[in-house]
Image 1 (spheres, one colour):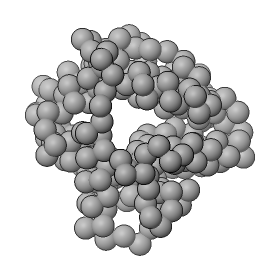
Image 2 (cartoon, helix red, strand yellow; image 1 turned 180 degrees about the vertical axis):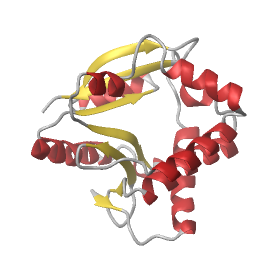
Image 3 (spheres, helix red, strand yellow; image 1 turned 30 degrees about the vertical axis):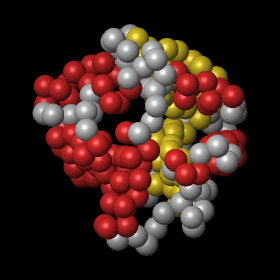
Image 4 (cartoon, one colour; image 1 turned 60 degrees about the horizontal axis):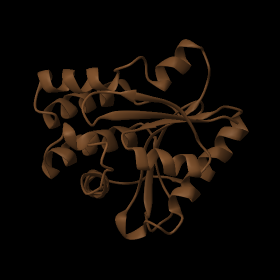
Amino acid sequence: MKKLTGLNKEDVTAISRQIADAFYDYKYNAEDLGLVKYIKSRKDMFVYMNAITQAAYNSGLLYTTSDRHEGYLMLSGEGAGRVRFLDGIKMIMAEKKALGGFSNMKSFIKACFAEGNTIETRMNKAKRKYIRIEMLVVRPEFQGQGYMRKILEDVYRVADKRKVPVILDTDDKDKAMRYQHLGMKLDRVRNCGERFHMYDLIRER
């Protein structure tokens, strides 16, 4: 796991496009539409993911697997840091644009927080420290080669050193099952509307 530094805006934009394409082209299981239920086009997916990726990079939260950039990871939480305030504002404004305006963004947020709080909110309420995987993607040409396992094992080592759990949520049942196969435990499934679920996962140290 290698923190990305020394990049210019065009470099980060190129990474954002790779991440957006990976999310947009992902084949969801029959029970879930995931992000594409709310983000309808490849262009809008890029706007959405570019906002997240730029904020992650500017805040020192963006990592990759190696110099070949097989995959990307955004971390927050104990020892990892948080998105900086101004970057967070820019991210929210870009996400609103990608989702088609404030009303759609409100519906998206409401859906994501349906059926109780997210695992992050519940951990904060319990005053528990953690490392959160905000985003994890392996580029399509490198999938099936063990890079997701490698990324997770790197995060687990960091979390064990800091004596905290790892948490994440995902929008697809198949993704959740892969995370469980790689050491995480399903904490809760939130029914967030028709063909939209959020799967909360945790890996205790």
